[in-house]
Image (cartoon, rainbow, N blue to C red; front, side, top):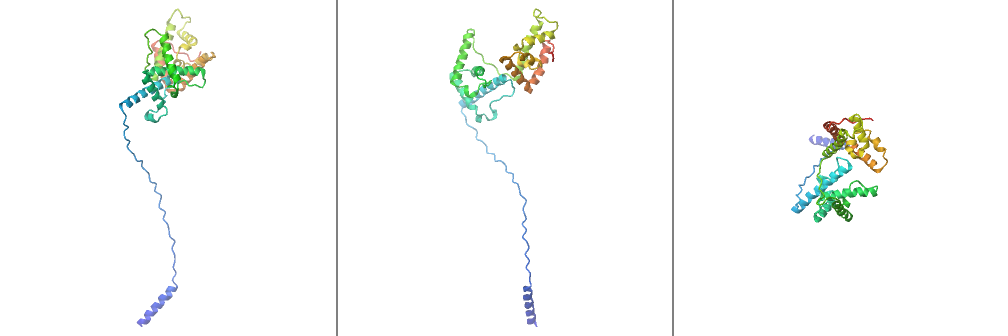
Length: 285
């Protein structure tokens, strides 16, 4: 019986195996969410550049030349935010090599760099008269050429020839835009006050009328800083169809476009006029 049972079970297992269904389950791929790995920059400490004492003195000298060049450029262009060279990365600036050559030229010939740059700006104005596309400021890449050097020698010679004996060219001090505007406005107010208070030249009844008449007749003697605050001055200058009048109007328009300059002028003029006891300029005439 036991054997039969075994056979039967075996037989049953065989039968069951014939009927066995093998079902295949689909393989599910679990997509992992993408992980964005933030890469942190690797900071490699720079080794300090070893420079000699001579090179350090040269760098300081070049920076002084650049600073004075920017000062004269701001004054010539009537702007407050002119900087030719990026001070934080001056080594890689394309104009650095030009100023380096200017420094070495002045150092070699024992020329004062301020007087040399003054001559270059004077030269730029002469070039502009003959060439319409020339800029108001001298370009650094021509400031050490042979023509530039010959003009500087001529500039110094002419000054010594037409000046008093023993008088030499003086270096200008660098002043801020604000200080320059204040000084020019003070000079203008002194001229107007002298004219108004002079009883011999006085023709009109009131100081207000006398002031307007002086500005109309003598606008070329006043600075563009002061004239930029007068709205009707454009009509007066436009009556003169010449280059001087056009240049004067261009300077006034440039000043009016500068927000910083307009704020300074608006603040300074009332204070200076009040100090010199001058009437306020009419807005309309």
